[in-house]
Length: 179
Ligand SMILES: Cc1cc2nc3c(=O)[nH]c(=O)nc-3n(C[C@H](O)[C@H](O)[C@H](O)COP(=O)(O)O)c2cc1C
Image (cartoon, rainbow, N blue to C red; front, side, top):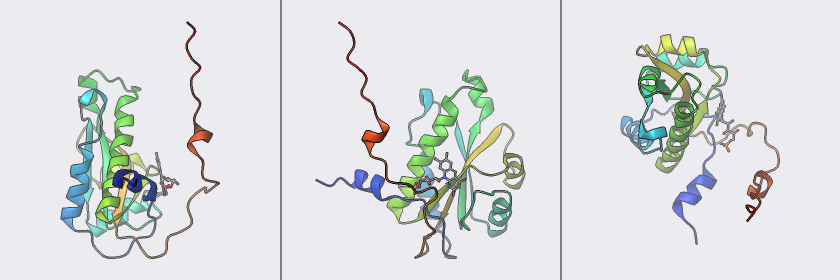
């Protein structure tokens, strides 16, 4: 039996070469809409999103992002509302808000894949410069940029590709509890 969700999980790959074709706003909005369904710590929804499809902003953002190999036609920067996080009792080192960034990112990458657009996450960027370029509201910390664009026909080789790990390589069963 093939399941479309499991199929999408297996087929999705990071897209690091994108065409010049713009991405429709409706597609970007669909990716943003998908993000709000991602699970969040305490159901607090502390992530905030800064979307841009402005070519000049994207060019400057790329200039401060060594990890942005692709030239995206749109980008969604996933931020944490640090003030709200503090109000809800998440200390600066609490893992929940950053884990939430990961759940949102994974959901967005799958949504983009389902919509037929390419997506690639980037964490190698200057947080301080991105905050200025994107004119982030006070209290928002930029944590990950999700690049969006139409995939080029040829993609660069995967980063750090080694043999595909099986779930068995990554997993141990816990021993049965003593009775
Ligand atoms: C936390 C995190 C940070 C990442 N940062 C970058 C990045 O800065 N630049 C980049 O090209 N890819 C980045 N990636 C994408 C990974 O390199 C990619 O998921 C991995 O190579 C496996 O490729 P696949 O997702 O196509 O299977 C990041 C992924 C994660 C989860």
